Image 1: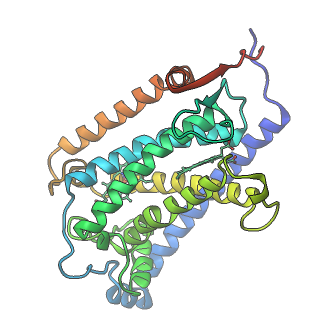
Image 2 (image 1 turned 45 degrees about the vertical axis):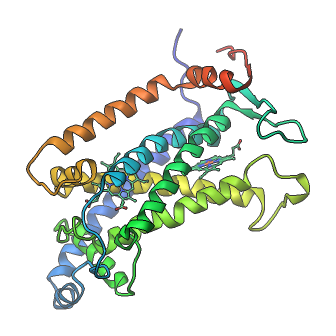
Image 3 (image 1 turned 120 degrees about the vertical axis):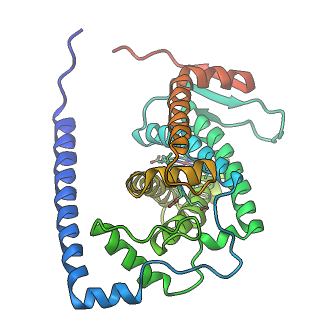
Length: 315
Ligand code: HEM
Ligand code: HEM
């Protein structure tokens, strides 16, 4: 059957995406040139000498990467893959291939359970596992004292983060001290990812839940459905942008040392073992993504809930 030609709307979308990519690339090249020039000025030199880009955490903060951190970090990436793919379906408003209704056994509710589209149901299943992993990670972070590696404890983190940003932009990387402590920009972004973006996703996601009584609904303002949906979607763009830059920098700034630290908990810049473990984790994620597509999600849903499959739309 011949391929349908793109509609004018699709064509203008592609043109807009290409224009944005070109503008972004040109902006990046200009920013790199400005950063390299500024580093060489007297003012730039004095600033970088005063604020080298990192702030040592309080005495007694543990160093290194314990096994629980490796596991929870890998599981986080695994679950986010499915959260993001179901989220993209939800945003696009694609017709769910099935509807899922919880069997009203446990917890038993007075009203009949709501019917959920497959993408919403799958989003909530994976999100539950993601939040459970996050709770384990945050508990261990607090108990072990590792929290001080990703939460700023001094205001000087701000000029130091600017300094680290200039060093990254000038392509002359900041000193690599991750085993002992992260640089100030990493502290701010890792801290925001864990203690800001995830709670915002949780609170706005719970607000989007269909369980709330209609009298709690608001049409305008910070408690409205539209506001929660917009804020919830912002988290998606934050996670996507963060992941692209984060993984890019992990690979560019000493991939072997970084991957050995995060995936094996060893301080080693030579061994390829961490890179191999990371590559295996990517293969596992890709395989799981292929295996757990909507037909498999429907099979899982049928084991625990009532499922109504929708007829396939004619092409
Ligand atoms: C933390 C726990 C989370 C909960 C409880 C939650 C819950 C929800 C709910 C109830 C919906 C509405 C589904 C519907 O309209 O049928 C939704 C939609 C969505 N979720 Fe989540 N979610 C969570 C985490 C996340 C995360 C981490 C991301 C991004 C990485 C994300 C991205 C989205 C997007 C983009 C939508 C579609 C919004 C739209 O309709 O424009 N969610 N989520
Ligand atoms: C799958 C690809 C990923 C790789 C290869 C990777 C790699 C790493 C590495 C090597 C570190 C240590 C940083 C350093 O040594 O300088 C790290 C830390 C971190 N990563 Fe990732 N990462 C990935 C995905 C993600 C995703 C998707 C998120 C969340 C959206 C994330 C959040 C974090 C956080 C919060 C830390 C700091 C953790 C702590 O020390 O408590 N990473 N990552």
